[in-house]
Length: 492
Image (tube, rainbow, N blue to C red):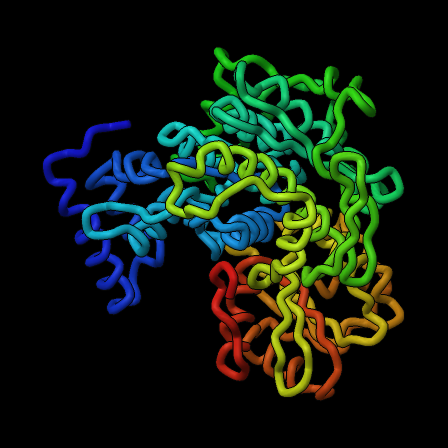
């Protein structure tokens, strides 16, 4: 752990002043305080998180980071631990620093037992240079934001850096071959555990190779995908740096051959999603099935719950052994029944199956950002008794390349049609629906007008809004002006 510089007493006050000033002037955004503190006191993050007796849980992957981070943090809090997290999905390193500034004392003390942090795949590489996570939960690798990373083997390489840096337990998706292969990257002494699916559910979650239509990814590929001029121009310096590190000649190549050879008992899952229903799930642990009602929306979130259960089990085993050092004096080992009860109480993360009541109409916000996520959302929410809206933006946080929309099957919307299409890429989305013979009632690129018109039409009818990330944030803000929108924090 780095020693604090003589001026460390000023770090938190400086960060909080920048935060206050950025809010007053409405310049710089929520990550600006973190950027300033990173420059002013580079060791702040390492020193602050180094105080935690149970260390850090790092959650990363293409799909489900925000929801799963919320699940893990909520469950650990419910089970008696004091948890620090970044609940709104501010998943760059400077976002974590900014979140810390709101929680630490002026002297830099963090009153928590453990941190549960969502990290973007590229920025996770920067994070593990400063903080070695005790636990890593690596969810999946799918084609997403191709303008940042190119093809998905680049993303797998980035996540391999996380596996290599983890000191306690790495939890991996058994059904994703690129993620399962990262077991070979875990250091000696680091435990490897898996979450997985029952055979009858695997068709819900095709791998990216199963979905590929225009690009065939060769198994075992170790070469670096070329960075085109257009792709390179989109990347920040930190993202390019992370990719350079992931493809360093000194780093052994990824291989999926070993993982593909493992079957059944050779690679048993710590937690298996065994069955799903309408707000119902059955999880298999330690030879037993545990059925429970859940408050989560969508089959994909039930698989995220299996992932969360697997890492929470690992943490609570360690918490029982370390309870004397914890701020939560009642921390102890927990039973499977207690774990299941905790997952049953988790509510959806903001914008990820969140339901907002607007004048008697339940409005569900459904984040979509790649083919897998959109397909699973469409499969999870019946359009027959609901009005449907799709809002597509192409801002940097969404990914500039919207070609992935052509890998989504929209034919399930033919019978009901789409009431409204909006966002920066509204006309592209309307064209895509036309090719799948899905009728579109209205197209309006002005998101404010479109959302207001959509949610006020047909009072009392359930409404689904499928939206990319920045469209979701703006839609949520619009709804916040006409309805009660809850806080995005853990447990709220």
